[in-house]
Image (cartoon, rainbow, N blue to C red):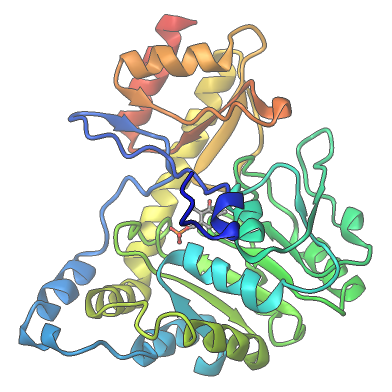
Length: 352
Ligand SMILES: Cc1ncc(COP(=O)(O)O)c(C=O)c1O
């Protein structure tokens, strides 16, 4: 601890991202990346961008990208905010829309960045327990709050909340913002984006890191009522006017426009997920229903930490969370290519 640090820095507990090991020939199923590369049109757009024009600042408003996102969702560009990964978008959301007098609500088991943002922006929060089946029950959020946020599908459980339930929540909760983090919605969930024109308190966030295979480019966005979007722009322009560089804007626009490629990759992941679920169940695992590009599973007689360590010896990396205790026997496994998943299943067959 340094005596030069601010009081805030002393109090921070930063987020720890999933490991990006510098080891060759790994089967990397630990951070929910897409196993397929981005669209060839994205690569072409990035190559086209590598010119003298890099001496100039990028468009601070990312107008072309916002237009493409608006068109894709059938919205207006003033309903779209873009940022450097949805993590940055979420950071601005916490600061601009979730910082009020009352505590905000999010699930006890969820994306572990949420409490970190609360620490950074000094926002009080209350964790709402998932039920025994690890589901989010919207009735549990029918109480006074400074805002509500959860991923749908939830992470790391993969469990989905039906759109009808989200609408019930919105009808109950009109006085504070409801944020639905749809990082994984492309793998089978029903998006709440179609509700934004009817509910001015609804904000939906998306990422290009998962379904669009662009975790390395760092692009995410939020859609909602223009007033909510305006708040995000006010914070962004008090922080960094150019969060998306020229490559990010060009590549993300090409990715949004290549609908066919995106859908094909997602369908492949969904198909492989079905095979992985069946194979794990055959080995005795309990697998939670997943609407995401990962699954959350536990074995009744094999310790999760040990399984994870044994897989690692075979260069297969998955994610094991030691905390909270309720999930310490679960493994979170990203859906890879068919070959990667087959290697995982064979390794588990040998161990079990
Ligand atoms: C639920 C959830 N939201 C948001 C993110 C952030 O994604 P990114 O910053 O890559 O857009 C993640 C990343 O894993 C996530 O799991």
